[in-house]
Image (cartoon, rainbow over all chains, first blue to last red; front, side, top):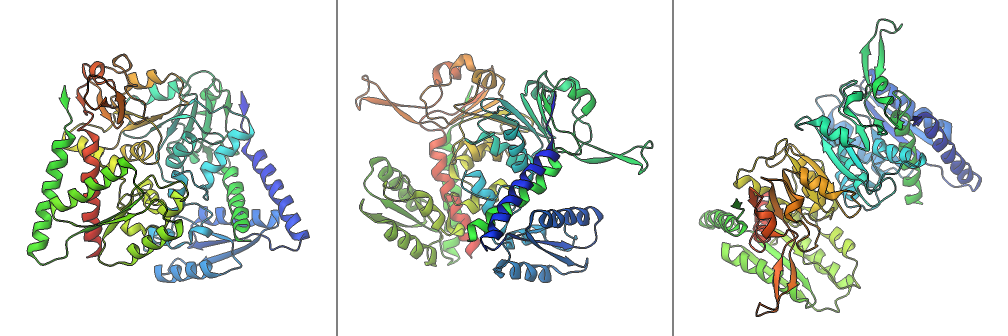
Length: 291
Length: 291
């Protein structure tokens, strides 16, 4: 059983990007500039945005954090986005989700210039991805493709079962792995809450991407020997033996499933770190497109 | 075994639209206006465009045919599209494919205003479909959903196998049937040329959408009893017993498969007629959006 070490691979990718940025600098070229918009004081959101800004600094990107109060109106937020769209110094930007309830999330995402949409959430980028045209791929699916590729996991002709049909993981993952591309050409099934006999599908799978948000849902008796496991879930599970009172768990019961798996991502340290690395990669791509 | 009669259902839909147009007229409102752009003299394309224009006349739509010579340049075609985008009298328009080889098809499709893109081919509409936002659905998948719905074929929780991953049929079909919608909530698998053990998937399927373009590929021994069959294929097969020297065949071997099927579309008279009906429905929708 081989651990798909997202922490290590994401560090490799960051080092590769940092080397490219160093070359840009030595040539006197503008370096990539990522902006992040945060509205309110949600703890998890602040942590995520902080990690993104820190990663930018580490690899030599410029970064800007636009930190807005909880009571920001939709109109005010849209006006910030308009400014970012028109600011030539900014190559790409993200709006950290979730937004406060009084703001229409979809409306805000639609306002982002698709050419600066490094999260890949704008319908135009989603459509370009679906049509297999060049686009910003959403960071989590992009990271999973990269992880499979760097570990030379064969996907062509394999049966991939994607658990979950969310817009940011399950749906794009199922489309991408079915296309003619690296880490693609797979036979993909999407299972979800309405699926009947779910375990019959997972037991037939060569590769499982678990993204349903239910902790330790996938057990050892639901998979076959040699399966490749990508665990996208990350949930806090109460645990009195831990000082902080909880532990982090994925959608996969690591203990029982890892015994049968040929490759498996740990939680944490698997898919999570890859997501930030691919956001940086998209920002580099945005800079290259604009130069 | 019940025949899914696309010819009958498409006529029902056209009658329903004609009734709505009659009401619009009686109120003195503008009726929907569809334009079609045809470049060159490809026989099949001329037939398809002719059928679309004729269908418009029958139900009371206005229609405009822009018939351009084979040697039209890309720039000239783009300028026609620009005019259609800006012509307030036109509610929706289509560019008949394929285009002559000296014209970049993707570039032309991207030039169509998404709000007039009644074929649903623009990346913005594809993205909106993928994200389950209101959009123009591509006509063939839209027609299949409508056919399943009008025959009350249960899809929720069923295993649907979509054969083929094309941008205009296989891919959108697989996305739509997996979403929370009418004729949706299915567990969908996409199989294609790289799939291993294809018959194992088709034998497990409750519903099969065959869209691979290989005549009579799916045989009776590849499906289970009670399967629902949607045959999107239409190919000319040489046949000396016919006056014209050929017959039309689908991707399904009707003779052997129909013996096991609970519902099946014929070829011709199944999916084909539905496609034009849904193009008209999209044009009506475009008119309503603009009024």
